[in-house]
Image (cartoon, rainbow, N blue to C red):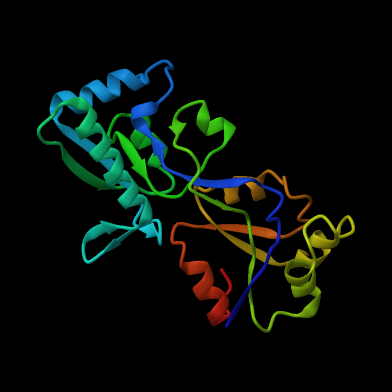
Length: 220
């Protein structure tokens, strides 16, 4: 069994949105919004990118892209079809990873990215986002039998209510797993949540693996 905490939920205003390649801000080597939209209309094809490992927003099930964000991207295609005067518009889906999804947008391999993506200032310098569709934050997951010295600061205390150094003391000598290519990773690496002391941070390409290791008691 596992437990989930409110750790650092208030420390980052994470937003889940669909960033649109078709609305990319003009910058050297990056197409403008109008140019990308014109290209979609000209070729009568809109190329979606999606993550296969981010349910319920985007995933691959039965060999097909599915999820809430996928449905929203279908609405985007419908709006373009309705306003462009086209009789038909073909949509294609390409699986992307958390680490390369923005490269796929910038390099023009996809037009629209469908999936949960935190809208940050640095990302807004390269792409534009739709309005937020979900609000979340950074949390911690622990084994149900975690010792009180670790569980209490992460599970029971409100963010910001702990004395300075409490989190670092709780995590001393321990290992934190985080999904690679996410804002949670950069947040931890930059120490924006405060000092983590000598805690070891390990990144994972598979979002499910850290949870499996906690349940199984494995050491990364």
